[in-house]
Length: 438
Image (cartoon, rainbow, N blue to C red; front, side, top):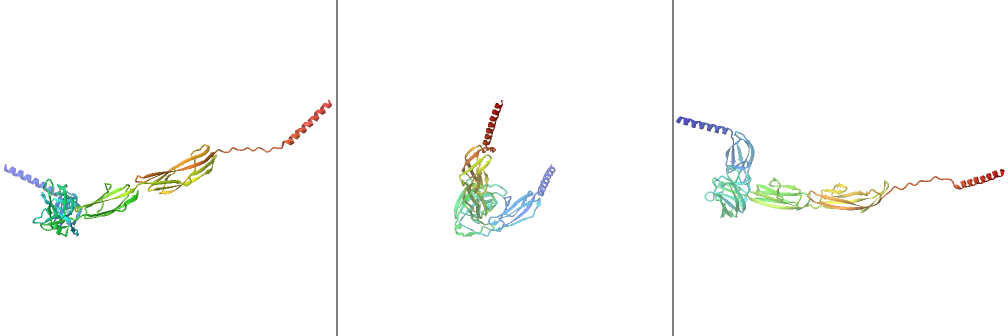
């Protein structure tokens, strides 16, 4: 019976070893060496582990970043394969600028995991300031987190986790030490004097010994400028901004985010309505906000004027005997589309159009008409305006004149009458002669 148990246990151990060996063959291992030694390793943007470490991961694509406040981070994307992968040697370069006050201190107590990562004003790696063990002691070994005075939102995330297990607002007062007990459900804050704060003139951003650490967070500085405060529809405005020690900046237009923007830069916009641009630069050392408004003139103004208010038209039969014309002068300010009815689309913001007299009536009779022309101008900002102009058309449409027939020229009737008289006379003599002969 004992032999059976022995073989069962042996079989179990062999199976476990085989499984472990099989799993180990499928693991991608990469050694990450960090300098300074206190640096934190982030995996795909999440805190993973503290100090140099061999990562054991499933094969695939990863983003490995090494962060330490006061140093330029090193981030790289790589594809890890099963087995051992080339080492990553991250030697971070310190930011040389010193930090000046006024400032206060944040001390964290009651922590369940002193390697938990601490963030101020955001939870991406750019807002990382250190781990709890660097800011939880003020008795034997000085470990302090020094920050500019102001209000902060603090987040604490355990290694290899994605969400904070603690978060809360922290107010930092000049030359005071605020002790945050994260074990208390009420998120208590206790303030004590920090006399050394007033004695210090400048600090390095990061300095650590075997059991000491000082992290001095630099205040966020930023500027935001709008080059014009008033524009017409279709005109551009340019935003220019700068920031220092900010982790990210954001700009909104009437509350709508513009998109990803560099920490310092400029961009041109063509707003279609009065727009308020809100600027926000945030970092571990604070949040700077600013806003600027540009008034957009959407109003369109039009005018339409005839050179002469009356023109004539005369037609006789099918022939136009008189056809007057005039010039319409027009203008449209702050517009990008202009129509004149019934002429159609015109180009530009001002000009002239020639119109010729042509009555609407076609039957015979006098012409006495009022003809109306209408200009409509619009812009892409929603502005529009109309104006009208009237022409008085006078004249007549006459019938074709009657055709006059010419009679042929005839001889005078007097000789003919004389001839008739002679014929009558001779007829009389002839008749008398006949009577005598009887």
